[in-house]
Length: 406
Image (cartoon, rainbow, N blue to C red; front, side, top):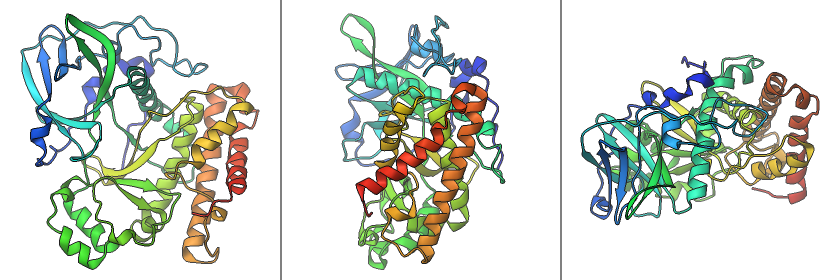
């Protein structure tokens, strides 16, 4: 599977022109509760999202600079700083006729703040929040990660013996701004991004046949949620004892032992992708990767792939030895990442024990090699400090001190 890994930070202003043409979300019975949300379009401000009383989103057609306005950081990245240098870029807004599109909650009957909206043939995800600073920060980080994954992937994987495809990142599309009674404000209420499509229903049913209790399979065979399944990767956990009896389908976790059974041929690739991704997040993006998640979902025209999501808890750090303890803590509390064998109560000679040892070694080696390549390119002075190796040692030490058995 080929990927275009060339990314120019001078061309990042073209981002909105590359939106995903994903499948329409399946209708659900919860649409009545969503009438308070609608996506509108005005010829003076472009796209916006209305809520009642009113909180709009502007979705200009031109650039990230237009989306964020006079932002403190742009993404022609000066890698000596967490989010680049100052920018005064501004592109005129779009002009178009008025229209309106409905928002639909991605996971009905929950307090999820993720919605979908259909604009022509394209589906977008919309994330709303009540903390303006957090929403603006998460959007900036997502743009930064989106650019750096593409720009540094070849560098990060140049020492891997096999071809490693890069993970997908939902393309950021626009900032959501709140509407005030007497005009338009610039307070962030969320953002719009590329929609992560669900697994094909035939794939979901095949996985159900492997992992679910036979009685539960029959009960869920015609469940409407089968058309909206996305899997949350838990490389650092084994499936709970009664997991096969869980009827949860939407955003269902998939555990290490399940991945070994159901996707054995893909495990090496996925773990390598995760190691290289963490190196980019640490040493190209300068963020601690706290709270990030990997999901298994398709991309149009491709097989099931890893998507990296959830950047709201990520924080920048200075590349010094003092910051490594915080980086290690961010990893050990997040079960999306692989873990060493001693963390698990497993027989080291069992098939699962051998797989854990093999995949941790792979993750470790890819992370260290990718980190070295990135640092030598962007921070030669930091490259000689041995921070990536110190990070891995801190991670293992923290787990031993914690004495956890998962």
